[in-house]
Image (tube, rainbow, N blue to C red; front, top):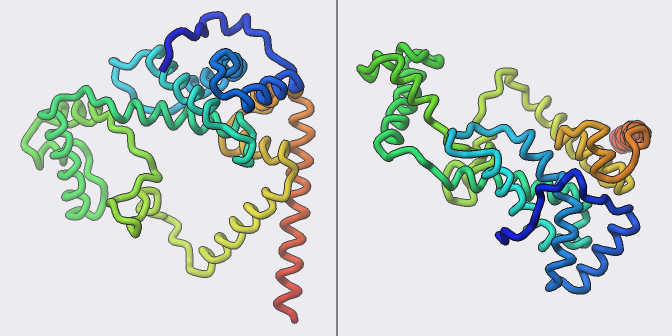
Length: 274
C-alpha cells in the first residue's frame, strides 16, 4: 500500500456534494491510472475506515495497535476504490464496508505471533475440551480440562486467553466443494421441525426478493441499518442525507416490504386454492 496519503487531517477534509462526488467518480472511471483522482476519492470515504475500525469485534493481541488496524482498513478502502464499478449493482459505501472489514480480518488472521509450542498446547486444550464434551455430554469447565491434562487450572485459562485465532463463521470445514460452513455446525437449541425450517426458508426467500424490488437508496439503508448495524445518523453521513430523511426512507422501506410480503402471501394462497 502506498504510504504517501495523509489522513491525519481527517476532520478538515471538505466533503463533496453528491453531484461533485458523482463527477469525481466519472472522471476516475474514465482514467483509472490517475492516482490523484483515486486519492481524492479515498479521502472522501476515509470515514468508512474509521467506522469499521471503531466497531470491528476481534480478539487482538497487544502486538496490534490502533494504527495497524487502521492501516489494514485503509488498504481495504484503496482496494475497494480501485475495483469498484457501478455494474456491481451496489452503492460504493456498501461495497467498501465489506472490503474494509474483510481486509482487516484477513491481515490479523495471517499474522500469528504465538510460538509453535504455545499453539500446540492450545490445540491440546481444545482437544481435551472436545473429548470431555463427548464424555460428559456437556461443555467441560476449565478445572476439568486442567485435571484431564494434568496441569494447573490457571495454565488452561492462560492458554485460552492467548488463543487469538480469528475464524469466520462462513469458513468451510474441509477443502472440498461439498464441505459445510462452520456456521452450519453450530447447534440449534430450538430444534426446529422440518415444516418450520421449510417455512423459514420461504420467508427468507420472499424477504430477499422483496428487498430487490425496493428503490436502490431504500435498499441501501436497510442493508446498512440491519446488516452493518449503523445508526440512522451514521447512515445519513454515509449517503450524504439528513438523519430525518434516513428515518423517513427507512419507514417507507418497512411499509413497502410489508406490502410486498403480503402480496406474495396472497398470490401463494391463490395458487393453493386453484
